[in-house]
Image 1 (cartoon, rainbow, N blue to C red):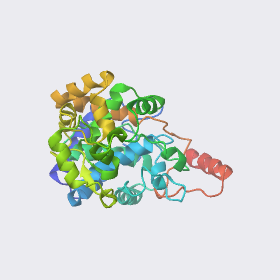
Image 2 (image 1 turned 90 degrees about the vertical axis):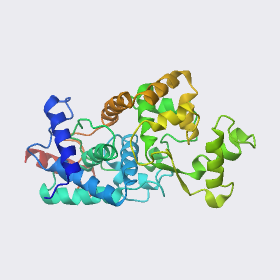
Image 3 (image 1 turned 90 degrees about the horizontal axis):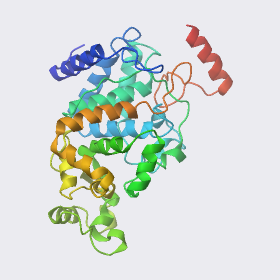
Image 4 (image 1 turned 135 degrees about the vertical axis):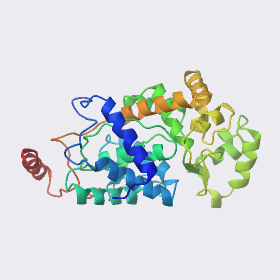
Length: 343
């Protein structure tokens, strides 16, 4: 296998994190889970993400978003990857906006060749998100592994994902319900340092803030003019994409927080972090220190990736990330799991 220098650096960095971390993370997940089961797991995932980003650097934000949307619905079980009319892919927060499925499919195919029926789609997605951040210039952290895949998806649950239209209080409640706190909310919002949003998600701020018929008075005036030009008050502009950080749109840095301090956050839900006493001080701290942001981001990503995980004997190792291996009901699942666990 041919490795690029940046790919080697990711692998060496990640290997060092494994070496410095205790092998047993908890009763559920391990840092070195695949060291004997599939020793090439990490390089295969890292290389798949790197190659995808060579074609399209913006795919990094999509992979990170997929991981977040997966963990917030039924836990980190790769349910977001399942096809089907009632799947999470068809929920409004994902339909026509979520992407990166093909990248995960290709990585899964390569892993099935190297280590058949061994690596879960949930672990692939978790590690791919970490690699996407690293290759975008962001931090690295030791990813805990050993998740299994869920059998089903929930479109209804996906409809309840945190929304840019919600009050901050509601978003805080959704994070709290997942075992995450205010620090996690602020630092994970920093993922918006990469990626983009469709005009309809922030257009009310430009023309009819709070039903006033006027723009958001707190929005930086120069930024407002640029956005009104890019997203005119017409339905045809609703699906245009604007960078969440127009300064360094594909680089993982702390510019997102600096822009919030200067009232130049794109989404109302992001700017609300600077307008609330409970979160504003942390926004300011991250705007002043990228190292603090990076350290805290890695810690919160570990916490995010622990939400609702399935471990053996629960769940499955899908042959394809797009569908469950089982179509014959719970009894069949149980018999198969008992067999595979004994083997």
